[in-house]
Image (cartoon, rainbow over all chains, first blue to last red; front, side, top):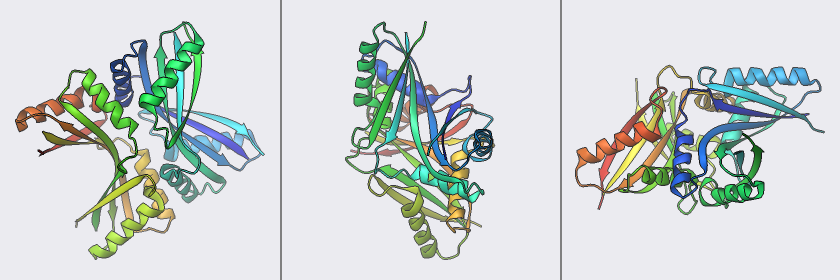
Length: 83
Length: 83
Length: 83
Length: 83
């Protein structure tokens, strides 16, 4: 079994209105030291598999088919073997 | 300067409809090996500061005041010193 | 065929950190006239069916099983008959 | 005072992975009659103002500056006068 964490970020150059909102709100609260804020989404999967490469390819496939929009998103996959 | 990554998850026991939706959709696509899926939100901040403890406390404060709802969310803060 | 719009809001009394963030950010930008901000999620479905009551009950069922978390969310369903 | 509801949708042609996920999950649960699903975000603002045109322009401005990303989003504003 594996835990797969998929981080889905907007590509560089794609405006992130939610991040901009967070930045402005933090500055407004007096946290002037905050210079940038970005938000992104994560999905954590628990999935069967013994072979790390195979599991990686399967999750990569899920990202392309369902979890991300390749035009606006980049994604990163991290795997951790569990019992 | 620091990069702070804040991961905001629903507390254990709080249903995550989005994760459930992802799980069902992946199973439907034929990925039967996926046994669980959870979604959560991340915020990445770039902020001034020299002292790791101080920066941590500041970010912890931002979570309580703005970024998370303590009744339904747990959050984790990771700091990385940058130039 | 019907279009069903499902609006999924946090229940009264459940803090909405995202809405709070939006409010603070707008105030920070100088929009002082904004007194409250709430965010919520919508799902728009296109689905087969002839009988409005049946379609409504089906969508209500989907909300309970998948789209909403009844502990923290309220939801509203609006139907519109289409060709 | 006005209530302003802002609906923020992905532009036509921009893939909506979350909607696709919802569609697959509903089909998987046996709701075969669901032919399409789209998700979008809403912000509900309470704001001061007497003149509907002025309020509309102000909210339109907020969308451009903060709430939406004009490259990938369309938005609609609905106003309702309140006490």
